[in-house]
Length: 471
Image 1 (cartoon, rainbow, N blue to C red):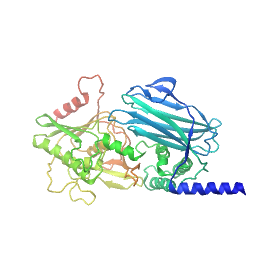
Image 2 (tube, one colour):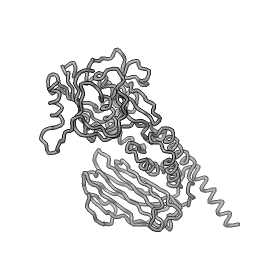
Image 3 (cartoon, one colour):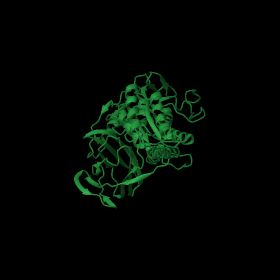
Image 4 (cartoon, rainbow, N blue to C red):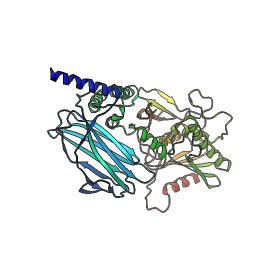
């Protein structure tokens, strides 16, 4: 009877905790070691306030000693990383939590985080059958100096059955898989069933949706689609800052386009990645692009070089709309969903019913540049929105591309944030050119140019200028 009462009290406590999203944890003794610093293998115990050296372009790795799962099995394990560094840019952190049973992987949760300092928490469920656990952290794109203020592990006080989690955590997980089922481009029922099963196990013990970031990052990773990912609210803010995210309250945001005349009739237009959140920001983005082209045209430009080599993402609609003067108000590209349905890219066509967020009116300045020669410079950093703009120019008369193949992120992405600020961004359609030809992955240039870093001149730009000079 006493044992039954104890069990019932524990169940009542868990039910209340799950309903309230509260979490009770206990520390886990663990020793962290630096196993790789700046690409050099080593085995050094990590002390408090340790500093990792600058290693731009290389990685450093930190691992916890293999832990016996005696006190972890059936519980949720939390990694708490307090990392500090100076500098405006974020760093990349990969976190892996793996449980083993008789040297076989029993569960594995892994994800990549954008991080700009402070405390990062990631967690995973350790299955009841596990006998060992490993925790691994990889630091990518290291800053000048990374201070590891503290690293620690903790575990839930309660033991959970597989699949047992708070109501809001369960609803959050269902929301993610409902989105994948309805809209994911590469939908495969069997794959999603398997992913859902492993995600439910990895989510066990979650007291709130905040506990599920590593679980959902693992789901996105296992999709095998490099354009789909789960982003925390903090990561969305970081991406907005790094891509010059234009907010309605920030009228002085950096220009997404830089234009100059290389000759009296030759304009050079360089684009950088830019995302715009609000309607006002998207309008401003489109108008700045269009205005830059209009200014070049008024100054005599009739031939164009558009440099997309650093355009690796951001907002597609304003970018397509802003370049309307060079391809006119016609159908220039489409998105094709998994059922073969085509959606027109009507961005920027005045009074077009398919442009659900009109960028221009008939009264806005425009010039007829559809027949003016355009050379586009592309490379392996041309991605996503950059590839979308490139697709808009495919099959356009008097156009050619120069450089190297693009990144291959040629899918539209449904990335509307959820109420908590996070986003499961998933591919929902493939790009198709104006003739309806679907773009398959990377886009190869018409004129491949093998540019070397040690070259004193820009070989890709020079090749484009030579082509334009012959027209």
